[in-house]
Image (cartoon, rainbow, N blue to C red):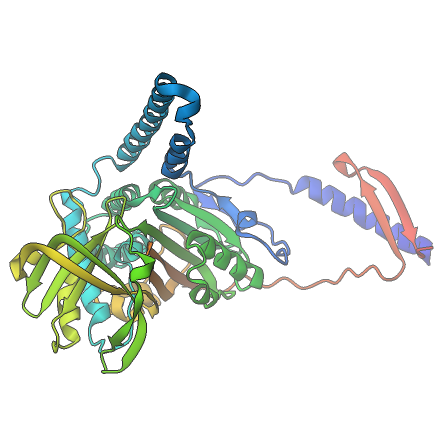
Length: 498
């Protein structure tokens, strides 16, 4: 019996060995990225293990460490060095630090280029106004946190992966006329915002997650990597390891500020792809609040409920805007960013905020967002501003499909109307658009993060599932080891482990 089994094993292995030799082939490009052979997903795959293509991010030199510089200066011993040597060493440190600062700022300016520019600030302003109005409309209490820049980048990537009316509707919301403009806008926003300093950061990251069972057009993947700095990952959708990897990628790029929202992301076997964009911000106040000036006070909610919270206090001269029923002023961060606050007058309804907040995002002569044509609705002044700012930590986890549909983006959600032909030949539609954001404010500054996840489901028939074959070698078996051309090197029968 065992000999007949061995003969059968040998004949099968020769046949299979020859077939394996004859069926080897090279995939022809044709712009199609074929689905790989299915392999078992690692139990705890990290997102690095699933990377198909990692985006090459622009590099900046290390920002000079101001704290370390002052430590070096303070470490100079005047009594030991004497006047002449002390001044000489002091000047050397200053010159070296200044040279590092100049090199860093030159590199940042080179990365910024022309910045966002007038051609893009107007569409960005209109888009921000429309989306803020839509998302905040009807909010009478509770918190809503939203990142216009983050959603803009995600929608630019969605435009890149769609075509026809699907693309036209997305571009219309973005205020852009072509996908080429979307590429330029995404790159300009990324370069204008990106900062990875020692204490102050604005970090952006984009990614594309592909279902390993389907084919994709490689040129679109290349475009996403080049113009959107998007890394591409490929995995078995619906597997817990894939979901864990997606969450790990989001958490790493948002400093773990949105773990609860990320945990809500789940793929399934029909998930064709996910487009994910993240934005992380950390800013240090130009003039930090003193801890000893923080004390409890009362915050009254929109519904009239009184809450006891910690308030930070500071007095600082600065510009402010007074409008009908509201005041606007800002707190600057060290790197030039700022946090603007709109405060309705006592007794003015909560919806006064939602009506006027969209105005707080408009272009200035520098081509960046600060205050809108607030001058059209408010009078600018300069005065002594007494700040009482509550320490707060607010977040939102939003379903954006209703808002996007209301803003004219409809076809991508409709089976038969959605057009994802730039990325795949399969029929597909957007099944979820999730936007999560969080903002924390304390005496040192502000930390904030956002992500947008756009999930695309295949509406085509799933590939036929292959039969499952169990090869549990828990009983007598034969083996054959073959070399090149299928030549047998070793063969044997195993009927005992002793």
